[in-house]
Length: 482
Picture: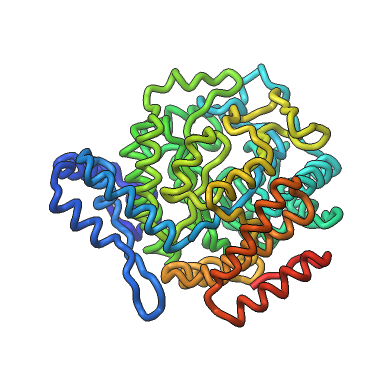
């Protein structure tokens, strides 16, 4: 039986409820009156506190996803853009993945790190190598990392992950510093989540891969990850361990996308109902080619237009949640979905263990890559591209460092007030990037953007303070924030 507040995976991600939802969506995909009613419900409303959006249930959002009325699909896209602008403005947060180890004891059939793959060399970074990787990332300009590791209790125990986090935070190179470490590692215990929280992580990220239990167990035939319930209930344990920012995601292409979409939103609803805080982020990766992995073997791939509509519908359903897209996607695809709802992107990414240190921006090691990188531009090229496209690249980590996480972040975000901090913080961190790392051409574009955008800070006192901070950054000082 479906129970959004249950702590059992089969109750809050209930198979029968998803099937009924998909049937309801199919029956109403031509129901123009209902679709207009759903869009009206989801539209931003101005209040005395700011802008509010109620979001949508998984069933309502599934109707929008199924809709095949061209004029309604245009309205869905327009609403997604409106909501994105209301909550995130033109800011795009930048990050990079850091792969620590590809040792893994699981047999996931879609991942090249599976234990039976003999094509790839196994590698685990030493702390000295972690240091080298971090310095290379700092020299690019990154301030926010997402660390990744295979699941292996011998080679990658929690103590190793904690040591890596400590090393990352300890490195101050020139003007560089990693100010936020997000963690994407296998489902673990409440005790281990508590240790991650104490280590000062930002968001704990765990992709569900697929919410279809039968498919999940086939795709994960052996290893700890085979346990569907333990994996699906991980976010509840993470929150019990004190981590109040968690990130959801599915790997689109493993199962039917409408099933995954409904399951993903049901998971978000569950976290909100039980913990009072929905997911801090939702990631939308698609299956990609890798060592001994052929994506064409899977028959649930989705085209770019369908992918863009998924992003738009997620943005409408959970307006307060950040959305992440990686370099799995091409430049053209990333350009389209950024406008529809994506708020965080990676730049200059390497998906191999030890892929940054010792390599030029043009070189790219492939022997330990987790997946093919479609967007292979440097961070500087991505930053300039964003600015040329009208966006503000942000390296901000202020909310995490000021304690604006979990329900404190959501209380501000849900009424659009978080922009009072985020907009000037984005400009300050962009100025740091321009001073320390940008090419001359990128710096010229960025300086003009900052001079223009600083005038859009509505509060005069905050605007004046931001101008003061910008002057100090240009004079060599660093790390100011609101």
